[in-house]
Length: 384
Image (cartoon, rainbow, N blue to C red; front, side, top):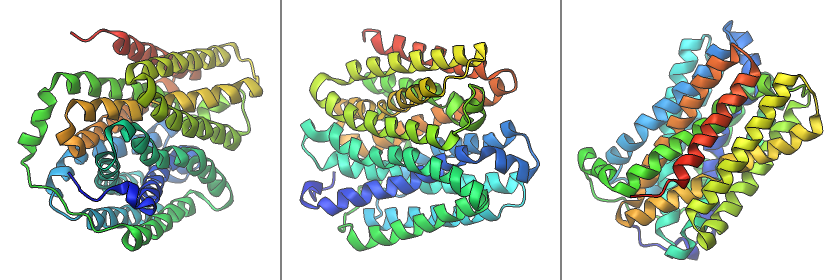
């Protein structure tokens, strides 16, 4: 555990959130220009969407491995290096002439993200009092949710005005700027002991951990079945103001993440998760009905987008809080494993979304609603 209280270094907390904003922008920005990217690379939208799947899979696998390999590195050096890798990978993605090269650079970007995000979360969670832990996690995750509010809509606008390659170039520049900020402002924080991966993963035998991680996968799969293909998904419900709708999703995501941190500290994780999954199932179900009935109600879709974003990103603070409460001494690893589970869920959701996109948009939303209902059932099941 680190011993430099983050509450005595307010600027450090802000920098951690700015770093997750850069990572989140990279992870989510593709959804804003997926059709343009697919056309440029001469592939289908479903095929281009698999770049998100590959990113998610590389993150999920790489996160615990990198946590082991980089355990002894000073935290500032690790975070700066991860952001530099992320920036260089986005330069490669912006210049990619074909889908295979794009996918290779997305794998590299995922490794940079996997090295950054869990360590940023672990630093925040380890250095505050237990009763404030969920709120600290919400601040760090807030960078990701703000990225959904700003990164995806701005990516959509940048792709329309500058092209999708320039949009990825802007993400690369953002990563470099934040890396410089982390280096300048973050305090010197030591690394931890070198623990073999096999020993680290022993925590997976903990009953509470076994209950939490599969729920993270299921919940994020529900959230991302349609979101990875948000442009065609929104066109399927008669919406033309795609950028505005993506911004409303992001606004809901920011509100849901921040409110869930406070609510978890006050009322408990299971209650917050249950409310979130009920909202997600209802939102996806109504969108499925709108798509199937070919009814266009833009105002209603806007309201649903806020609920979709809030229910998607209210999951992470309570889930991380449950994990860290189960094994406080393994906070860094548990945040890393939960990040892996998040991206495994994103990858699963993207695969399911690509499959259902070839049928009907209503099937895509309907699949997401069923997954959200399954997550609710898992949440409400009483532990033995």
